[in-house]
Length: 397
Image 1 (tube, rainbow, N blue to C red):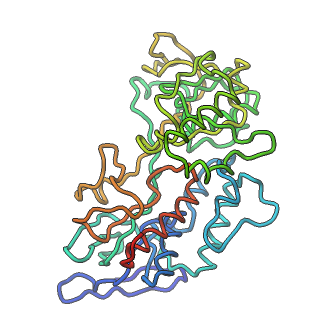
Image 2 (cartoon, rainbow, N blue to C red):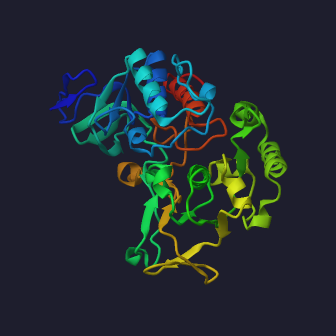
Image 3 (cartoon, rainbow, N blue to C red):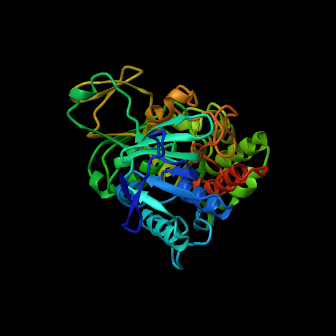
């Protein structure tokens, strides 16, 4: 049995007498995104051997697939990985191609052991080790770090009548180029981070009428105030008590945008920091969408009830006729097959613990990158990686 490594070599996996491979006295890290790369690096630095298993055939594949207009909503200086940085001239909010380059530089700089083309099918606990069943055969390790991401699988609700709709229905992950929407009537469903990201791009294009279907109002911050990137303040905001961070974000939203309820946007059910911890709702960033809402280019409408051949029926019974519907309706982790039997997922498939937290009955199992953070995913990846490595090495984290 063999597997292809990063250097193109084949590593032989030798079973022990029990029929299972010999135990790897280290950690298997599942997923080579920011969280997985940071975790593997931290583990190796702590003296724990680590190997990354990546189901795709190249690094940063999800970033290669995302739409052309995608930029980070987090600032360049707070979106790095240990020992690497963006080159001079990178915009404050890096384009996805810059993120891909960062991943490659990080993996090469630290010579991280990544095995590509290996899909993990199931993880099972064997008392003092973990059995990892993969597309290339079983692996056994003392530690397993699941870093497959909270946005692994785009989710679109099963709306009544949607299959007969004559227009297009796409997920926000497949947004494409903003110019593709010129002259089109567009409905964006979802007023969260992904919904506002799509609307920010669309606000710079001469589209037809746009609508935003909002079930709940967002916790919304401007990308910039003047020339200052608001995300630069995220480390300070993360240090505040949750109630105070909620109040600070709400005050900033009100001072910058005014009362958005006048334009039909529902109020947020709770504060931005509270929602990060309670239902894992990321904070939305505005970069032109609010201006378009106030100008009437984007009309805020109720939830979608159903589809007909040529229209969308809203909860209030009114019909609109978009050419394209963008479902900014979130993602799922897709972890049910992999770890569903372990009892570690909530009803939405999100791990019950994350970072250095764990289940005493399942020692050596860690999850990282499964929660949004005020700091952003890169800073959070570094923090969680260090904490996991410390715990795995037997130190207090």
